[in-house]
Each structure stands twice: as structure tokens, then as C-alpha cells.
Image (cartoon, rainbow, N blue to C red):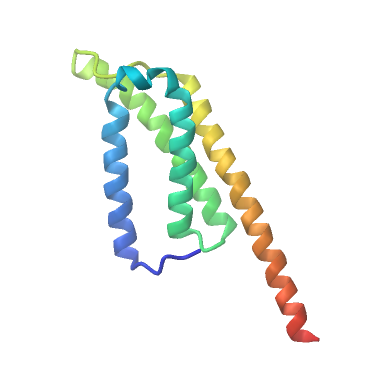
Length: 136
């Protein structure tokens, strides 16, 4: 799937969305959402994986893997930044480093990857089926 956007437009869109995400992750969740923190982590990383794969992969597994790794590293950096921000600002604007959040980030990424692999395989199978029809 390709949105036919110019590469600069895609990069600006990603920077804007991840800028908002960074701000969102650095602030404490409103009390009403705190019981759903882990689910929100998984959902964010599922949809972030989908967003970036739609923009950049063009059905290329290596690009998918790079996006997976970069999102995992982004999640780890956010967790460290949350812990550091409490020391830096001398006030508690967020919680602490939580390894469970990293685990749920990974669950979201793995869930999207499973969907992406199914999509990728369907595309491969349908492409090979079309090619066989052209030969005969």
C-alpha cells in the first residue's frame, strides 16, 4: 500500500505525529485512563507500526523490520526519558521507568507484525497467481 505522498510530506507528517506522541508520553495519563495504561501502550505501538508501514515499506520485509526496531527503540527511549524527567524537573510529571510498558509496546508491535506478515504473504501468493496466468 502506498499513499503516493512526496517523501518530504511523509517525513513532516511523521515528525509532527511523533512530536505529539512524545509530549503525550511525557505527561501523566488522566486518572480515567490509568487502569488501561498497558493496553494503551500496545494499541499505540500497533497503530504506529501500521502508520509507518503504510507510509514507508512498499511491501519490503527489511523496511518492516527496520520500522519494528526503530519503534522498539523509541519506546525504550521514552521510558528512560520519563524516568529522567522526574529527576531533571524535580517534580513528578510522569511515572517511572516501567519494563512492563516496554513489554506491552512489544506486544503491540508483534501483533501488527503478525497482521503485516499475513498481508505480505497474501500479496506474494496473489502476485504469483497472476504471473502464472500471464504465462499460460
